[in-house]
Every structure is written in C-alpha cells, then in structure tokens.
Image (cartoon, rainbow, N blue to C red; front, side, top):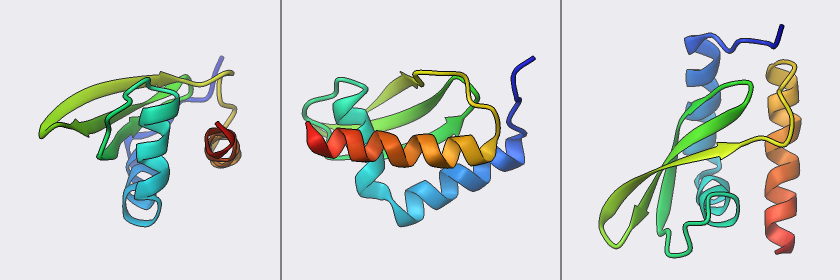
Length: 92
C-alpha cells in the first residue's frame, strides 16, 4: 500500500513551496506541466502520485496535474523528489 499524505502534510508542503519556492512551482508547471506561458503558479495539493498546481497564463488560472515518476514513499521522499525535479527542470 502506498503512503497517503494527510491533508495537514499536503498543506504544510504546499505552503512551504508557495511561500519559499514560488519560482520552482512555476518551473514545475512550465517544464513538467507543459504550460509554456506561465507567469506564476501555486501548489494546491500533493499526494503520493503527483501534485496539483494552478498556473497563471495570460491573466487566467489553469489547473495543472503533474504525475511523479514514482509513487512517493513518504514526506521525505516528496522533499527529495521535488528538489530533483527542480534541478532537472533547470537543465532544460
């Protein structure tokens, strides 16, 4: 059985990413979500299989679902995966 993120864990991760790493969240939307013209993005939720973002494009909010390349084992795995994804995105 895969790890299930509680609403509190999802909220904590999302708040941290939105407050401290907004540039990375926009980069996720652009690189992994295929939203080329994103001007900003917010992480709305995260679970073991992916994350849900809201991307701002031309003044509109677009929902973006990004699947992870593996099912996350726990919150620490989420931390390492998000860091690896931003490093990968910066190389593209």
